[in-house]
Length: 343
Length: 296
Image (cartoon, chains in turn green, yellow):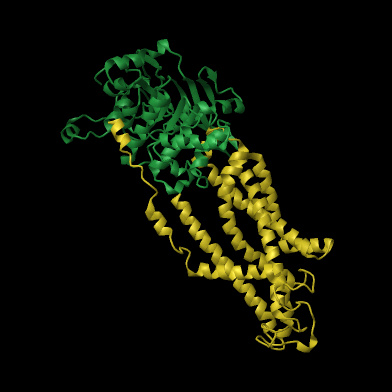
C-alpha cells in the first residue's frame, strides 16, 4: 500500500459514515460460586473497545490467545449479547434491538467460523447447509431457484455444483471452509466477521482461503472484521489493524503505519515475535521479549493493563489508565508514552 | 500474488482413500452373524401367522414331553403337548412387539424431550432432570406390579408401562448429547443466520442425537426382551396361554426336576442368541459410527 492510500484510509472517517460503529463494547462473563450461585466476580473478556468499520474495508483484529478477539466478534454480531456499550450497524443500534429485529438484519451481517471441522452440521448435505439461510429468510421462491443459487454460490467459492449432495466429512479442511464462506455470503451480506478463518488450516491452504476472501470482497464489496493472530496474514489482507490486549484495543492504525511505525510497546513486541525469513537479519534485529503470561481477565491489573509485562513501564503506568487518543489522524493508541520515540 | 494463487486452487475431489478404507465389510464377521440371526427372528415374527405351523395353543396330552427333533415336532413339545416351534415363533411376535414399541417410544419421546431441554437449558432443564431422576429412582419392577395390580394384567398395560419406564433413560442420553452438540460452531452458525429454535433443534440437533440414540436403542432391545422374561417368570407377564419366551422358560422350569430340559432350554437358547445378536449388531454399529464421528 502506498502513502496515498494510507492517507485515504486515515482521512476516511471525516467524510464517510461507518458501516459498523462500536463504542465502549464490554462483555463480562459472571463467575458464580456457592450453593446459591452468587456472583463473586466477572471475567472481563472484552473491556471497553471502540472502533469503526467502513464499507468495503477490512479491519484486522490481532492479539494473543485470550485477549478477547473472538468474543468481540461474537458480541458485536449479537451472537452473545454484550454486557454494555453500543454497536451501530448502518446507523441502527443492535444492542437494544429485539431478537426478531436483529434476525431481520442477519442477511446483512454474517460470520465465518474458525474451525471448519465443527462449523458444518455433519448430518446435512452441502446443499442444505448453503441453502439453509436462503430458506430461513425466504430469499428464494421455489426449489429450482434455490438450486440455481446454491450452484452459483458453490462456484463463487471455487467448489463444483456436483459437490452439493455430499456431506461435510467428504471434504478437506480448506474445502469445508469454502462451504462455510458460501453459507456466509448466501444472502449477500455487507459485513462479515471472519473469526480466525485460517487458523485451523494447513499453511498451504491458508493463502488460498485468504485469496478467496479478497476476491469475494472485491466482487461483493464486503466489509470484513478479520480476526487473526497471524501478523503477516493480517498485513496482507487488512486496510486498518487493531491490536487487542486483555480485552482492550491498545493501538489502531492503517496497516502500513501499524507495521512500519508502531508506537505501543505491545504492538512492537508482537512484531518482533514474527520470525524474519533471513538468518542475517534475524540474528541482528533487536527483539522485544515479553516476560510472563497475559494476566487473568478476571483480575486485570490496575492502571495500564499492559504495565505488568511492558518493557518501558514507568511508575505511573501502574495506577493511571492510559487515555485512548488519536496520535495522528487515523492512528489511535492507548499508551502514556506513545509519542516518545526510541525507547 | 493473490489472483494467481486463487486460480490454481486445486479443486480437489473427495479424498478417495477414505472411501477405500470404508469399503467392504468394515463391521467384522460377528456383526454379520448377529444381523443374520436378528433378521431371521424378526422375519419369523412378522410372517409367523402365515407359516404352516401348528396351533401354538392346541393342547395334546398324548404327545407331551416329546424331545427335540421328534417327527412332526422339530423342537419337541411341552408338558401339555403344545408344539415348541410354533410357540417359539408366537413368542417371538410378543417379544419383538414389546421391545420395539418400548425402544421406539423411548427414542422418539425421550430423544425429543432430552434434546429440547439440553438445548434450552435453564430452569426447564433443571425441572425436567429432577423429574427424570425421580422416575429413574423408582424400582421398575415395583411400578409394574403396582400398575398391573390396579389396571389388570394385559399385553397393552405391559407395553405402556415398559415404554414409560424407558423414557427417562433416553432423556438423559439425549440431553447429554445435545449439551455437547450445542457448543459446536455449526449451532452458532445456525443462530448467526437467524434460524429459529425449532429449526436448530429439529433440523440441526435431533438428527445428530438420534444416531447415538439408535445405537443405544439396539442394545436396549435386548434388555427389554430380558425384562419381559423376568416378569413372565414371576407370573406377572403377558397372560396365559399366550406363549412368550419368558413364560416358556417359566413352564419348562417345572419339568426340569424330571430331567426334561428341552422345554426350558430351547426358549432360553433362542433368547440368548437374540440378545447376543442385538449386542453384536449394536456394538458393530457403535464402533463404525464412532469412526465416522471422528472423521467428521
